[in-house]
Image (cartoon, rainbow, N blue to C red; front, side):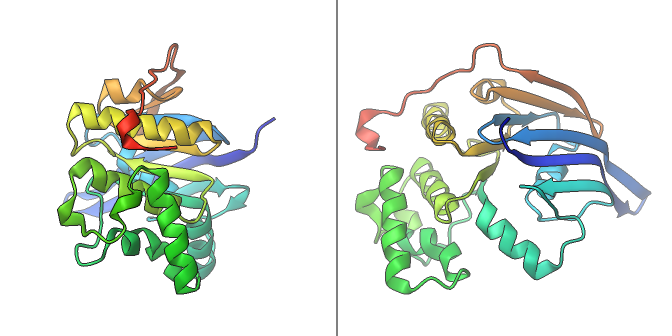
Length: 243
């Protein structure tokens, strides 16, 4: 039986608002195993983004349990949690979140700075990751000099730099045209084929169709959790140079 990467039970999150306490997530239970490719779906306000923030240890639950690669994280000390998160999870965001005054190589290497890796080792590893996403010739470029699709590739390279077991992607194709979005989904498919667990939030059915499993949220609850009958398989263009 494959390893359980994520397990949540009775997970709840409430926020204090001007109108009173708002329960954004209500007793959610879910298990995700190593090597799965899962799409999290639902309308605005359904709880999917809150759920992803909790999975990424970017927020803490109000109630319930969260186990990440076999460790209960809800009450883990901050420094220990940061170390586990940095070693286990790679993040990809809709807005790329690249630092504009840093080169692509420096952006990709940034997580290694917090790991205490020597500069030359960081540079070598960053160049390897840029090559993996088809951008080996762009190490010295700034983010403003490349396209949105290329910026998202850089963000994926940065997510891979610490060899994570899990990638969490929040609307990773939301700022891209459909063709470029398909290329990014092909890259996620390739990474999943290499054994990396991929969990992504999307509101687009055609993007979710690339995942092998679709979990739908509504009003703070999971209302469906189904296997995709025939997952779409995007193809990475040969000119992208990804290998």
